[in-house]
Length: 327
Image (cartoon, rainbow, N blue to C red; front, side):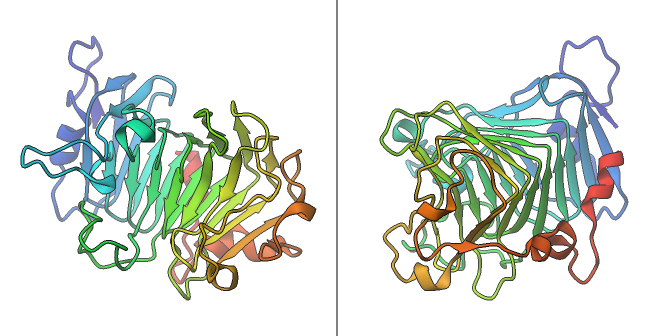
């Protein structure tokens, strides 16, 4: 199945990505690949069918772009909220994307609020050589926490859905944002990714992660062999903070630039999280990786084997997403 933009001289089955997805049966059980030709597709994608693979010609020129945002209002006057602001909603299992950029162009959070490039909620989901571009809350790795702090404030496609601890894999991806721009409750493994923190002209220019890992969940975020870069001044970006008290985020074998604040982590004024969260680092390099300056409640990884891809993602079905790199 091939998608090409309206006006393209290339042959194609569909002229929009959503039209191609809509053509797939709701009860699909067979792997289906959609090839997307280069172009900027101004679409708000909604994907709930399993066993779909999206492959672009290359991430630089195959772009899915939209500009919804949390402060935007529906005709009723109700605001969109964070979880209706997505460019792409991926709420299914067994989904793969390769060579695609997902972007939200709404702008900085001070002006528009949260603006998701991707809302990803499912199990056995993999992204290879993809980019996620935004500002505040660029990439949401669902599920949602069990309940919002303010009742009814989640608003969005999965507000009342059962929470599933899904596994997500990101390889050779570029992720750009500022405030809490990788956040959520999933077990997610980031391998050889570039994490870019925006300079938004503040004393604190952001927090890379804001996990909401469920109590008792073995893993949250694991960043392995990633590169943390920025155009922000030195010591203005935190590695993360706990969206919920059992948050888990680990950086191993990563290169950390000088934009990382020396204490590394913020507790979001949740003193209980010192005992319940698990933020950890090990074998990192770069001027932002000085572990001796981290707070006492941050853990140092001595044995990294526990955080291998196999252990983090395999589960009972022994899912091995890296074999998909041969697609």
